[in-house]
Length: 293
Picture (tube, rainbow, N blue to C red):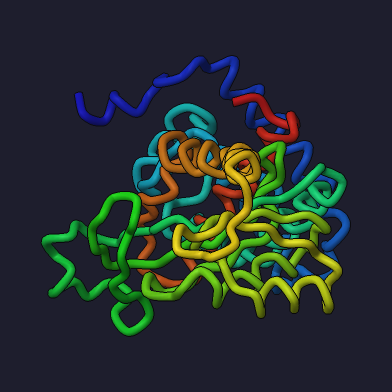
């Protein structure tokens, strides 16, 4: 009964349509970097890179956070003849294609340079329940404890710093430890794919950061003011910035609720990175209308 719950949980026709759209896009992109994907005994692979990557992205599109559950779904709905890779080999192939996934996502994100403006913000990526923070071993020495102001609670894990355009397209991103201040990661995020007009919240208030972005990257950066500033802008200006920033809150809500970006279960840095890049790439494909969700 439990195994059958993974079969036909979505419209089979729509599933095939989504897979075909992703496969066509991935095939066209991989042909551009095939020379960099070195592999011995390439002629012996059971599934081509395009198939493995398309399956990986489809899983992120459907919101699967468990690789075990996703592999069971694939073998029960897409490759019912037993031609698909076994689970551990599929996971290794996905990690091996991490460079390709990251490159394709980055090339797709460059389209955001033609959008009106960009917004930067951070999202907590907790790795465990708050009750287990003191004894968790997952990513120990890499992740740490940080404070989530919106939820007013401490958490153990990472922090995703993300830049999105006014149309919701994800551009640059950086993952840091949870305790990293937003200002420290802001320049790295906004200079991966520079946009001339950028907005941030009060956590990014820094005169030095604003000056550096403008002088070195010709990027304007606006943030709301603090209540204790002597010469603050008008309420109309504050409301205008708030409306501009609203898009990234919507993007975070979609990534958490539909793509389950805060539920990544990988136990290695390589696995975590591949899962995160897969989620952002799948989300970008939907945002640009290349794949139907």
